[in-house]
Every structure is written in C-alpha cells, then in structure tokens.
Image (cartoon, rainbow, N blue to C red; front, side, top):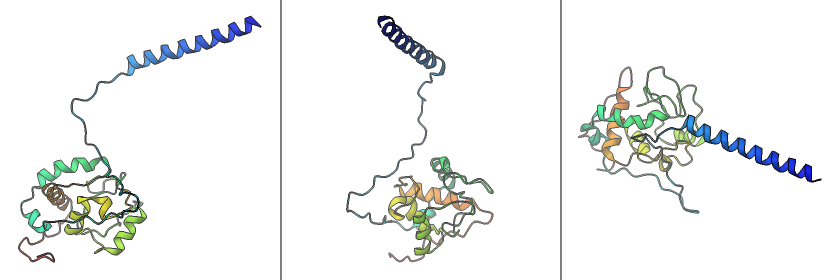
Length: 190
C-alpha cells in the first residue's frame, strides 16, 4: 500500500512542479508592460437605486447656441471615445454600435444591418423619430437616462462643449450635411 501512496504523492508533486514551471516560463515569455498612457475607458453609469426611476437628462443650454461656438476638429478628437463601438466612415461596418455616417437627421434605430435594443426601438417611436441636433445633444449627455434600457454602455458627455463638438463633427459625416440650427431662433425653453 505504501508504494501506491508514494506513487500518488510523487505524481501530484510532479504535476505541481510542471504547472509552476510552465506558469513561470509563460510569464517570462508573454509579459507586457503597462502602457504609458491609458486608452479611453468606456464607463457605464450606475443603475438608479432600487425603486428609483431615473429621470431623463435635462439639457440647460440649447444646442443651436452650443453649435455656434463648436469646433468639428475638437469633436473628431472627442469622437475617438466612440470609435471603440462606432464607425463613422461612409459604407463602414457596424460594430458594437451602428455606423454613424449620416446620423444627423437619420431616423432613430434605422441603420440597416444593425440589431437595435428594444429600448431604442421604443424610443424611436416616442421621440421626434429622427436624430435631430436636440435629440443627439440630450442622448449624448446621458444615454442610459435618456433611453432607459439602451444597450449603449457609455456614461455620456457631461461637458456642453464636448457634446457640441462631437455633434458638429457627426454633422460633417454626411454626403450633404443637414443645415445647422439658427442660434438666434427662439427655443421652447426661451
């Protein structure tokens, strides 16, 4: 009986030795340093507390006024956060999110070949049904608050200028961009 126990213990110790050796060798071969600069983090906003319904996000400054001082080049830089999930090239692929070429004034939840969440489909029926400048501004402020249940895990762009810059950049991603809203026109909040 002792020889069986000795054989089993030897096999166990031999297996542990081989696994430890492979682990150490793998760490040496495949070790990678931490990057100098981190990439863009996609942060999902926390869900509301139990029983608490999240209210739609409120936008203080009208988008027409924000767009008057927006910079499409700066928007292109901010859009890099979006490129993990969206493509903006004409005829480009859908990724985790739909292609955004021509998104301004496009019907909501309508990009061909993309499977939208039921929350986004329902939202498209209850809004103005198009990605207007106003709808984009409100959505990009806090996607999960504007469209509860959306599959979009991005927390949003809280800075007015960042949103305006991105929307102006998205506006340029079209064969014939939609006209910009008049910053001097009265709005529903004025």
